[in-house]
Length: 267
Image (cartoon, rainbow, N blue to C red):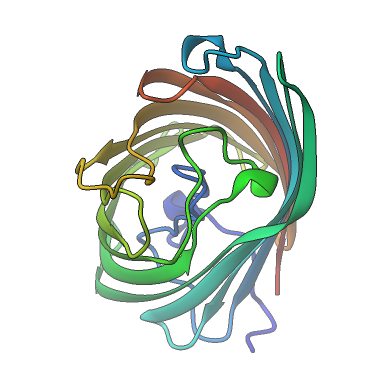
């Protein structure tokens, strides 16, 4: 393991991990971890959704989640990672109050970086995981069973170094859902601004579009989200992130909002 492992950003010539929830899936950065580097992100999320637009019983769905994400550099070009979520969820409507808790979503991936220069990087990623169930934060119409497998392509570019550092990244993937749920085409875009060595400002967008090939009881929905956040880096090893995820467009799914806080550590 490299003793100098640190939380570094694309403008400083290595990865900013781009985390998100698009269908509650973890997403990696186009820039791979260096050989032996480890990044761990532990977070707390509060999600709230008014279900009246989709549920004839109306109601309110809330979830408090704790999640852990990690990346490990097997080599300078190969990164493995994963994510696990534990949540306490509640659904209140005219039929009553329902509560549940437990682990649901678990995901692991392997990523190969086939291009890297000072200006840009590109990778491919293969991931597999268990989709969200009710207790892990899935609303009505979004939960699922079985397993998911996804193949994705990632690209990132350093746009500017002075007077501030600016980078952009994009990801596109096809998620095959082996249970009843419809397959999904997923996209993600990010712009990051690093005005100083301690601060990073992020604006991320996410979209998941259903292929509408679900079985009778499966989930079929589209969702578009925006996610502004700010990261404060204390030093080479520790940083915090806070922000909000706003769902701005949907089909077959009641929109919601997530507030989140994360602690980053690098080794």
